[in-house]
Image (tube, rainbow, N blue to C red; front, side, top):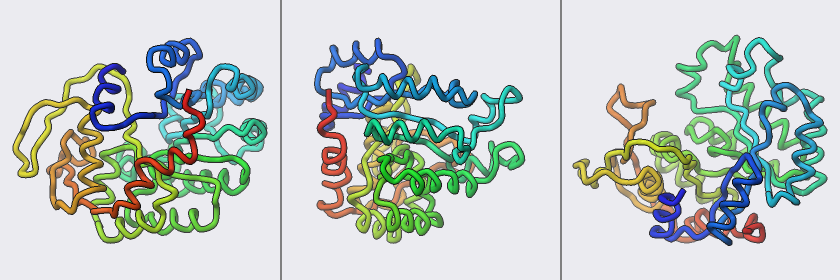
Length: 305
Protein backbone atom coordinates (compact mmCIF):
# COMPACT_ATOMS: atom_id res chain seq x y z
CA UNK A 1 0.00 0.00 0.00
CA UNK A 2 2.86 2.38 0.76
CA UNK A 3 4.20 1.79 -2.75
CA UNK A 4 0.82 2.33 -4.37
CA UNK A 5 0.15 5.57 -2.51
CA UNK A 6 3.64 6.87 -3.35
CA UNK A 7 3.20 6.05 -7.05
CA UNK A 8 -0.28 7.57 -7.19
CA UNK A 9 0.86 10.72 -5.38
CA UNK A 10 3.57 11.15 -8.01
CA UNK A 11 0.93 10.74 -10.73
CA UNK A 12 -1.43 13.27 -9.15
CA UNK A 13 -3.98 10.81 -7.74
CA UNK A 14 -5.22 12.39 -4.51
CA UNK A 15 -8.24 10.32 -3.49
CA UNK A 16 -9.08 6.67 -4.04
CA UNK A 17 -11.63 3.96 -3.43
CA UNK A 18 -10.29 1.19 -1.19
CA UNK A 19 -12.11 -2.14 -0.74
CA UNK A 20 -11.54 -3.76 2.66
CA UNK A 21 -12.99 -6.76 4.49
CA UNK A 22 -12.47 -5.78 8.12
CA UNK A 23 -13.17 -2.70 10.20
CA UNK A 24 -9.82 -3.00 12.02
CA UNK A 25 -7.92 -2.75 8.75
CA UNK A 26 -10.11 0.14 7.61
CA UNK A 27 -9.37 2.05 10.83
CA UNK A 28 -5.62 1.47 10.54
CA UNK A 29 -5.57 2.70 6.94
CA UNK A 30 -7.67 5.76 7.78
CA UNK A 31 -5.22 6.66 10.54
CA UNK A 32 -2.18 6.15 8.32
CA UNK A 33 -3.63 7.99 5.29
CA UNK A 34 -6.21 10.48 6.62
CA UNK A 35 -8.54 11.93 4.01
CA UNK A 36 -7.29 9.80 1.15
CA UNK A 37 -9.79 6.95 0.81
CA UNK A 38 -13.44 6.21 0.28
CA UNK A 39 -13.88 2.86 2.02
CA UNK A 40 -15.96 0.07 0.50
CA UNK A 41 -17.02 -2.85 2.67
CA UNK A 42 -16.40 -6.21 1.02
CA UNK A 43 -19.57 -7.99 2.06
CA UNK A 44 -19.19 -11.61 3.17
CA UNK A 45 -19.39 -13.71 0.03
CA UNK A 46 -19.33 -16.87 2.15
CA UNK A 47 -22.62 -15.76 3.68
CA UNK A 48 -24.08 -14.75 0.33
CA UNK A 49 -23.09 -18.00 -1.41
CA UNK A 50 -24.74 -19.93 1.42
CA UNK A 51 -27.79 -17.62 1.37
CA UNK A 52 -27.24 -16.65 5.01
CA UNK A 53 -28.97 -13.42 4.21
CA UNK A 54 -29.48 -12.17 7.76
CA UNK A 55 -25.69 -12.04 8.25
CA UNK A 56 -25.21 -9.87 5.18
CA UNK A 57 -28.09 -7.57 6.12
CA UNK A 58 -26.48 -7.07 9.53
CA UNK A 59 -23.17 -6.18 7.85
CA UNK A 60 -24.95 -3.53 5.80
CA UNK A 61 -26.68 -2.14 8.89
CA UNK A 62 -23.27 -1.72 10.58
CA UNK A 63 -21.45 -0.23 7.59
CA UNK A 64 -21.89 3.42 8.45
CA UNK A 65 -20.90 3.05 12.11
CA UNK A 66 -17.88 0.99 10.98
CA UNK A 67 -16.71 3.80 8.67
CA UNK A 68 -17.70 2.33 5.31
CA UNK A 69 -19.44 4.43 2.67
CA UNK A 70 -20.30 1.81 0.06
CA UNK A 71 -20.51 -1.95 -0.41
CA UNK A 72 -18.67 -4.38 -2.67
CA UNK A 73 -19.91 -7.71 -4.09
CA UNK A 74 -18.06 -10.18 -6.30
CA UNK A 75 -19.96 -12.54 -8.58
CA UNK A 76 -17.42 -13.64 -11.16
CA UNK A 77 -18.39 -16.94 -12.82
CA UNK A 78 -15.61 -18.75 -10.96
CA UNK A 79 -17.55 -18.12 -7.77
CA UNK A 80 -19.19 -21.42 -8.68
CA UNK A 81 -15.86 -23.11 -7.92
CA UNK A 82 -16.06 -21.86 -4.35
CA UNK A 83 -19.67 -22.93 -3.96
CA UNK A 84 -19.00 -26.43 -5.34
CA UNK A 85 -21.45 -29.07 -4.26
CA UNK A 86 -22.10 -27.46 -0.88
CA UNK A 87 -24.77 -25.06 -2.06
CA UNK A 88 -26.62 -24.03 -5.17
CA UNK A 89 -24.85 -21.57 -7.50
CA UNK A 90 -25.67 -17.96 -6.76
CA UNK A 91 -28.27 -16.39 -9.00
CA UNK A 92 -28.81 -12.65 -8.65
CA UNK A 93 -32.47 -13.06 -9.60
CA UNK A 94 -33.10 -15.35 -6.63
CA UNK A 95 -35.80 -13.69 -4.47
CA UNK A 96 -33.93 -14.72 -1.32
CA UNK A 97 -31.36 -12.02 -2.12
CA UNK A 98 -33.95 -9.23 -2.16
CA UNK A 99 -33.45 -8.21 1.50
CA UNK A 100 -29.77 -7.50 0.76
CA UNK A 101 -30.43 -5.14 -2.12
CA UNK A 102 -33.42 -3.58 -0.40
CA UNK A 103 -31.31 -2.89 2.70
CA UNK A 104 -28.65 -1.18 0.55
CA UNK A 105 -31.40 0.95 -1.01
CA UNK A 106 -32.79 1.78 2.40
CA UNK A 107 -29.39 2.73 3.84
CA UNK A 108 -28.43 4.76 0.76
CA UNK A 109 -25.10 2.98 0.25
CA UNK A 110 -23.82 2.64 -3.34
CA UNK A 111 -22.87 -0.87 -4.46
CA UNK A 112 -19.72 -1.71 -6.41
CA UNK A 113 -20.45 -5.06 -8.06
CA UNK A 114 -18.45 -7.41 -10.25
CA UNK A 115 -20.56 -9.63 -12.50
CA UNK A 116 -19.15 -11.49 -15.49
CA UNK A 117 -15.60 -11.58 -16.82
CA UNK A 118 -13.75 -11.03 -20.12
CA UNK A 119 -14.91 -12.83 -23.25
CA UNK A 120 -11.45 -14.42 -23.34
CA UNK A 121 -12.22 -16.18 -20.05
CA UNK A 122 -15.45 -17.62 -21.42
CA UNK A 123 -13.52 -19.02 -24.37
CA UNK A 124 -11.10 -20.83 -22.04
CA UNK A 125 -11.60 -21.03 -18.28
CA UNK A 126 -15.40 -20.88 -18.49
CA UNK A 127 -15.89 -22.90 -21.65
CA UNK A 128 -18.01 -25.45 -19.74
CA UNK A 129 -21.30 -23.56 -19.88
CA UNK A 130 -23.11 -26.24 -17.89
CA UNK A 131 -20.95 -25.20 -14.92
CA UNK A 132 -20.32 -21.50 -15.51
CA UNK A 133 -23.24 -20.46 -17.69
CA UNK A 134 -22.91 -18.07 -20.59
CA UNK A 135 -21.72 -14.49 -20.43
CA UNK A 136 -25.10 -13.41 -21.76
CA UNK A 137 -26.83 -14.99 -18.77
CA UNK A 138 -24.49 -13.22 -16.36
CA UNK A 139 -25.18 -9.91 -18.08
CA UNK A 140 -28.91 -10.60 -17.98
CA UNK A 141 -28.64 -11.03 -14.20
CA UNK A 142 -26.75 -7.76 -13.90
CA UNK A 143 -29.33 -5.91 -15.96
CA UNK A 144 -32.04 -7.38 -13.73
CA UNK A 145 -30.40 -5.75 -10.71
CA UNK A 146 -30.02 -2.27 -12.14
CA UNK A 147 -33.56 -2.42 -13.53
CA UNK A 148 -35.33 -3.81 -10.45
CA UNK A 149 -33.52 -1.69 -7.84
CA UNK A 150 -33.76 1.80 -9.32
CA UNK A 151 -33.08 3.53 -5.99
CA UNK A 152 -29.78 1.70 -5.54
CA UNK A 153 -26.70 3.42 -6.99
CA UNK A 154 -24.47 0.91 -8.75
CA UNK A 155 -20.85 1.09 -9.82
CA UNK A 156 -20.43 -1.73 -12.33
CA UNK A 157 -16.86 -2.96 -12.21
CA UNK A 158 -14.78 -3.44 -15.35
CA UNK A 159 -16.95 -1.38 -17.73
CA UNK A 160 -19.95 -3.46 -16.71
CA UNK A 161 -17.98 -6.48 -18.02
CA UNK A 162 -18.60 -5.10 -21.52
CA UNK A 163 -15.56 -3.26 -22.94
CA UNK A 164 -15.51 -5.67 -25.89
CA UNK A 165 -16.39 -3.67 -28.99
CA UNK A 166 -19.31 -5.90 -29.98
CA UNK A 167 -20.83 -5.45 -26.51
CA UNK A 168 -20.79 -1.65 -26.44
CA UNK A 169 -24.28 -1.34 -28.01
CA UNK A 170 -25.83 -3.28 -25.14
CA UNK A 171 -23.99 -1.19 -22.56
CA UNK A 172 -25.14 1.95 -24.41
CA UNK A 173 -28.75 0.74 -24.18
CA UNK A 174 -28.33 0.35 -20.41
CA UNK A 175 -26.94 3.87 -20.12
CA UNK A 176 -29.94 5.16 -22.08
CA UNK A 177 -32.51 3.26 -19.98
CA UNK A 178 -31.11 3.20 -16.44
CA UNK A 179 -29.80 6.36 -14.75
CA UNK A 180 -28.78 4.61 -11.50
CA UNK A 181 -25.37 3.22 -12.47
CA UNK A 182 -21.87 4.15 -13.59
CA UNK A 183 -19.04 1.93 -14.81
CA UNK A 184 -15.32 1.99 -14.05
CA UNK A 185 -12.31 1.37 -16.27
CA UNK A 186 -10.63 -1.34 -14.19
CA UNK A 187 -8.78 -3.43 -15.28
CA UNK A 188 -6.10 -1.72 -17.35
CA UNK A 189 -5.22 -4.72 -19.52
CA UNK A 190 -8.86 -5.59 -20.22
CA UNK A 191 -9.66 -2.02 -21.27
CA UNK A 192 -6.52 -1.66 -23.39
CA UNK A 193 -6.96 -5.02 -25.08
CA UNK A 194 -10.60 -4.60 -26.08
CA UNK A 195 -11.13 -0.87 -26.66
CA UNK A 196 -8.00 -0.70 -28.80
CA UNK A 197 -9.58 -3.03 -31.35
CA UNK A 198 -11.72 -0.22 -32.81
CA UNK A 199 -10.43 3.16 -31.58
CA UNK A 200 -13.04 5.20 -33.42
CA UNK A 201 -16.05 3.32 -32.03
CA UNK A 202 -14.49 3.24 -28.58
CA UNK A 203 -13.68 6.95 -28.70
CA UNK A 204 -17.20 7.88 -29.77
CA UNK A 205 -18.62 5.76 -26.94
CA UNK A 206 -16.34 7.25 -24.29
CA UNK A 207 -17.21 10.78 -25.37
CA UNK A 208 -20.98 10.16 -25.54
CA UNK A 209 -21.13 8.55 -22.09
CA UNK A 210 -18.22 10.37 -20.47
CA UNK A 211 -20.30 11.42 -17.45
CA UNK A 212 -21.04 7.78 -16.55
CA UNK A 213 -17.48 6.38 -16.60
CA UNK A 214 -14.98 6.42 -13.70
CA UNK A 215 -11.24 5.89 -13.94
CA UNK A 216 -9.95 2.84 -12.08
CA UNK A 217 -7.03 0.43 -12.31
CA UNK A 218 -8.05 -2.53 -10.11
CA UNK A 219 -4.87 -2.54 -8.05
CA UNK A 220 -4.47 -5.38 -5.56
CA UNK A 221 -1.98 -5.33 -2.70
CA UNK A 222 0.34 -8.30 -3.06
CA UNK A 223 4.03 -8.91 -3.47
CA UNK A 224 4.98 -9.66 -7.07
CA UNK A 225 7.83 -9.28 -9.52
CA UNK A 226 7.86 -5.87 -11.12
CA UNK A 227 6.80 -6.06 -14.77
CA UNK A 228 8.83 -4.91 -17.70
CA UNK A 229 8.12 -1.39 -18.99
CA UNK A 230 8.66 -0.40 -22.62
CA UNK A 231 8.99 2.90 -24.43
CA UNK A 232 7.03 3.95 -27.52
CA UNK A 233 9.29 1.87 -29.76
CA UNK A 234 8.78 -1.26 -27.72
CA UNK A 235 12.26 -1.26 -26.22
CA UNK A 236 12.59 -2.28 -22.59
CA UNK A 237 13.14 0.77 -20.38
CA UNK A 238 13.22 -0.49 -16.80
CA UNK A 239 11.30 -2.51 -14.27
CA UNK A 240 8.58 -0.30 -12.83
CA UNK A 241 5.95 -0.58 -10.14
CA UNK A 242 2.85 -2.65 -11.01
CA UNK A 243 0.77 0.34 -9.93
CA UNK A 244 2.62 2.73 -12.23
CA UNK A 245 2.29 0.59 -15.36
CA UNK A 246 -1.43 0.09 -14.82
CA UNK A 247 -1.91 3.86 -14.86
CA UNK A 248 0.57 4.29 -17.71
CA UNK A 249 -1.36 1.86 -19.91
CA UNK A 250 -4.59 3.77 -19.42
CA UNK A 251 -2.98 7.16 -19.96
CA UNK A 252 -1.70 5.91 -23.32
CA UNK A 253 -5.20 4.59 -24.10
CA UNK A 254 -7.18 7.67 -23.07
CA UNK A 255 -4.82 10.57 -23.73
CA UNK A 256 -2.80 9.75 -26.86
CA UNK A 257 -3.33 8.90 -30.50
CA UNK A 258 -0.45 6.41 -30.49
CA UNK A 259 -0.87 3.15 -32.38
CA UNK A 260 0.38 -0.37 -31.63
CA UNK A 261 2.07 0.46 -28.33
CA UNK A 262 2.92 -2.73 -26.38
CA UNK A 263 1.06 -3.04 -23.12
CA UNK A 264 3.74 -2.28 -20.50
CA UNK A 265 3.03 -5.42 -18.47
CA UNK A 266 2.06 -9.01 -19.34
CA UNK A 267 -1.43 -9.95 -20.53
CA UNK A 268 -1.86 -13.69 -20.07
CA UNK A 269 -4.88 -13.64 -22.39
CA UNK A 270 -2.77 -12.61 -25.39
CA UNK A 271 0.75 -13.83 -24.63
CA UNK A 272 0.35 -16.79 -26.99
CA UNK A 273 -0.48 -14.50 -29.92
CA UNK A 274 2.17 -11.85 -29.34
CA UNK A 275 0.70 -9.72 -26.58
CA UNK A 276 -1.68 -6.78 -26.24
CA UNK A 277 -1.10 -3.51 -28.10
CA UNK A 278 -2.66 -0.17 -27.25
CA UNK A 279 -4.30 2.14 -29.77
CA UNK A 280 -4.94 5.49 -28.13
CA UNK A 281 -8.38 7.11 -28.21
CA UNK A 282 -7.12 10.71 -27.88
CA UNK A 283 -10.08 11.78 -25.76
CA UNK A 284 -10.85 15.50 -25.52
CA UNK A 285 -10.03 17.35 -22.31
CA UNK A 286 -13.71 17.54 -21.34
CA UNK A 287 -14.06 13.74 -21.40
CA UNK A 288 -10.76 13.26 -19.55
CA UNK A 289 -11.91 15.66 -16.85
CA UNK A 290 -15.10 13.62 -16.40
CA UNK A 291 -13.18 10.35 -16.39
CA UNK A 292 -10.37 11.30 -14.04
CA UNK A 293 -12.06 13.65 -11.62
CA UNK A 294 -15.53 15.14 -12.01
CA UNK A 295 -17.55 11.91 -12.02
CA UNK A 296 -15.85 10.40 -8.98
CA UNK A 297 -15.88 13.70 -7.11
CA UNK A 298 -19.57 14.23 -7.87
CA UNK A 299 -20.55 10.73 -6.78
CA UNK A 300 -18.14 9.98 -3.92
CA UNK A 301 -16.33 13.18 -2.98
CA UNK A 302 -18.34 13.72 0.18
CA UNK A 303 -17.46 10.20 1.39
CA UNK A 304 -13.70 10.66 1.77
CA UNK A 305 -12.84 9.87 5.38
